[in-house]
Image: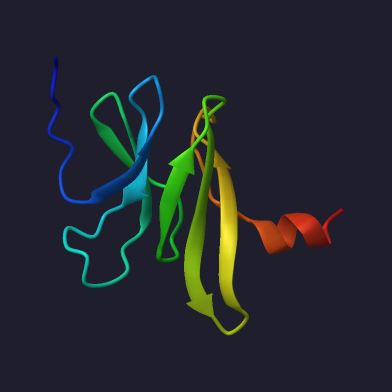
Length: 96
């Protein structure tokens, strides 16, 4: 088995390819920023605080962004994009 140190953070979901999602908060004391880790590299999914909770085998990341004036927002991201970004679900639904 091979282990790679990914730096500070907490992973909540891992896919079969070893891509992990979570946040960069080293302790469970407050919000961090939604992150994913792939091939030993950490990438932030949003400039808003939140957490990635799950990743599907197709690379779809699901998570929550911290509340703002409008409240908390669920998000999706595609881990296979060149620069993955969190897309709030309320904005995606409003555009349909």
